[in-house]
Length: 393
Ligand SMILES: *Cc1c(COP(=O)(O)O)cnc(C)c1O
Image: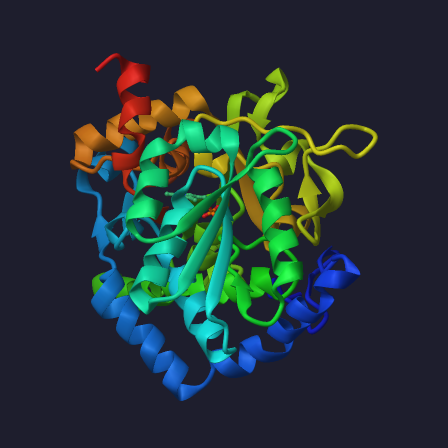
């Protein structure tokens, strides 16, 4: 059994491209070209050069001494928080903008909820001198003022989505409408391993640099390429997909996926998609999502904006359904405490999304010899206000 995508764009029963007819030419152009373009020598070189000189890769693999001591096991942190813009998202936006250029596109659109993906997209558009339009729910624009300001400084146009709940799904609808109307000159940059095929596979490949580096870094430090456990938080699932990618088919590497339980699995205020979700279609992909009995998508909740998504990418749906990965859910409270703990023990303030992955050490035990790599998906600067309010700092 393979955990990678098949020729038809499926991970087991999940994935595919369930899209309106009007979108077919755009998605098909991408599907036909993404593998050949991204395997060209000149593409690889430009991608690798930018990851090194602009993003700051390779990111360190850091042995967390005090954290390891506290939980009596061996914990490495993969430092995606040290990427330019403060998280892993830029690995993907760099890849997609290089692909867009080669497809002859001179305009980029994106949708964003918390604004992190919008900033990562606006950043690479500034880098390449390409027009950038970011759709964002009107409510989110108010809630995420600093990221809106960043996008504007970077030269992007932020367009408010004013329909429905005025949040992420409405922004997504607007972006899709735009893409249908501008099929020839525009590329739509999706920010996680979600959406119709080929997006989940394409984004996973761009993020797979994370596990490629982990392998040689572990070899240098431990004399072996494989950890016993690879751990990551899952919103849509892109940092996790990147961290797991080169270990997916190696059954001796245990995979742990950490979702946001919000205020608790049974409270109705959560984003624990795998536990609470049922198979359905969201954003053009068949996957697990939270929905009412008659199939309406349920509004998710998490204290961390990046995990506040009602579905997971199809790769993760299959990792869950097949039992290949162990899924854990972590509450707001458990995550916030783990974020504070890492700050005090290691001098690293993590993004609240990442804090969810760090919180597993209080919920589950490991042996002293276990070698665990946690993907530190982002830094906590953007979350300072939430930490301040929560802990009354
Ligand atoms: C966006 C984000 C996430 C969640 O997105 P994935 O696609 O699941 O990785 C996690 N951590 C950080 C720091 C983020 O910015």
